[in-house]
Image (tube, rainbow, N blue to C red):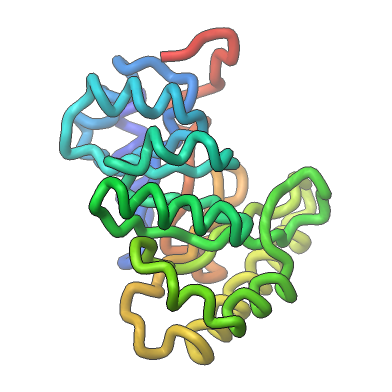
Length: 225
């Protein structure tokens, strides 16, 4: 079933949109089934689980960290993570820069924007993001590469609300690209859309969708890989 779902989603994606299979709390056997179906991008949001899977699964997997990242955990994933989606503060970005320098790498990162109505979700406000970019502080960080934005829509059945939030994030992405990143070809990713809302996200400009339940089924939160 996992392989069929991977192929079904992949075939439905327009050109320029990539699938991240969200594998958190799913066993390595499930990830290998997705891998055999051709999937190479996987998303995790727990550092310990990610490091264990990285050590034991195929080396050509691109691991994306998609959850809320604590600053004291950055050092464990800095040597290998392919992209960090949830940069939600300047403090975290500075720590990622520091740890990636130690690992002699440049880590691709996405700035997480708070677009949902729920206060529990993390992310920059529009004002906070603009203030950081205007300050020029990013010029001092030589070991991170800002590749775009990430956002999570409100958890609601109101499709129009979800569409409105994705649309606003895409508009802000285009604004930043024109104003601050117009000469930076790396600034091209917009990570939005999950199992319940990724078709809307794609229509509104997403380039990375994060899909877990549709591929692997419900998670068993009492177990870890």
